[in-house]
Length: 150
Ligand SMILES: [Zn+2]
Image (tube, rainbow, N blue to C red; front, side, top):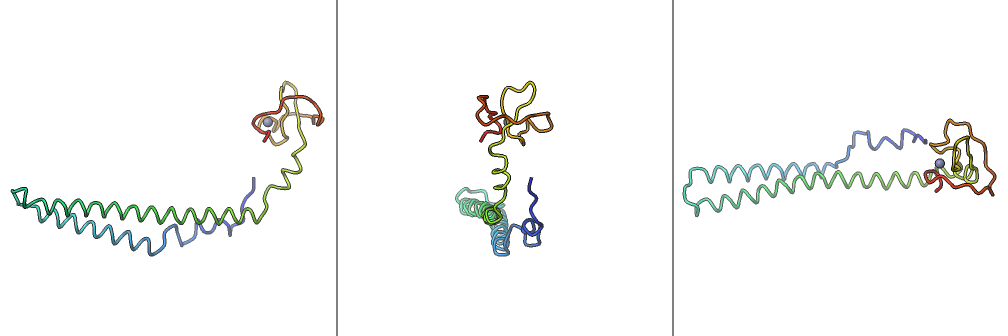
């Protein structure tokens, strides 16, 4: 298992967080607008007994409620956008570090088997780890483990 240096973990834990200031301001403004609209619709419709008088306030309430949903979508979209950008940046950093290539080359041709085993495994396979195993010749015709044979 590879542990990333602290500078690669910092964006997730730093003070910047997942949301930009613009996303936070936009979603809070939309939520406030929604609250004002719902309150205005509620107050406007209160005490009115005829449906014709209530319909405009009902429409206002529905639109204001939809604006509240939009506020949530803006908030979640901003967070998802940040996470996606961090994932792409992390992938680029990992590719630049060229992790794992040396380990794969070192163990690619080595297969092991132990007493009672019916399949050959790579030395780092979870079925061979910690067990007494011996290397199998490359031309041996023994079925390969489906977990570690990639
Ligand atoms: Zn295996």
